[in-house]
Image (tube, rainbow, N blue to C red; front, top):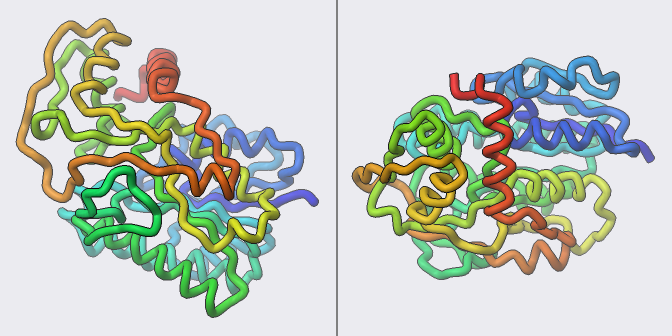
Length: 322
């Protein structure tokens, strides 16, 4: 059976990478994207517009009727749309809630109404909050530390309730610090890896919040793409209606990250250390055995290879730095 797939947020960093690979799949008939272009960009999907499989809707998941129309006739939904960033959520909690909670509820209910049988959605490692245990295990979370984390936890709760009440089949992905090509280095809420590349490639010292010993489980985007696409063809009933950590399964401090990128770019300077950032967790490391067991998830691209591939992509696309 040929699949028809809706990707919310498909003009964003992760969504556009999913689009690129999905359009090459012989068993996918339609790849439809809905994106309001607030954090996504048409340049991310410019190369797909001439593909007869590709459909683009400039629309907002906060508008329920728009989501209903976008999801009609689809066999699966990959829900990537969100207003990301912990600091942004602290500055704008109402707007973050509108996108991540109301928008997600619209996507879930539209899927139910249109009888879309498979939906995978992006949650976040931020749901672990103040739980200090390492590695992070799906069954043990703490209190959220930011409005963004609250919104992602709510999306998981809505998914569970929908699966109990309706004929609704979901897989939730707790992403751990995804990075790679098309990740935007611009603006006050950009992620750490594109910021480091932007600054060091320009010969400037990036700012590290805190002493730099805080650690993250950095995950190359191709690993995330593969597990999303896998859900479209997943026929294992025991794997559905579950939440999974999606990570590489190793931790890297921000200081280690700095020196890895400095080596790639030839930057000889030192970082600038600023104050700790409100709402951030100290350390993050995922236990990924649940995903490897039930989803056959295999994160084949390491952080070292991922950083090299990201660097080469930025070299080939200098316009991304503005």
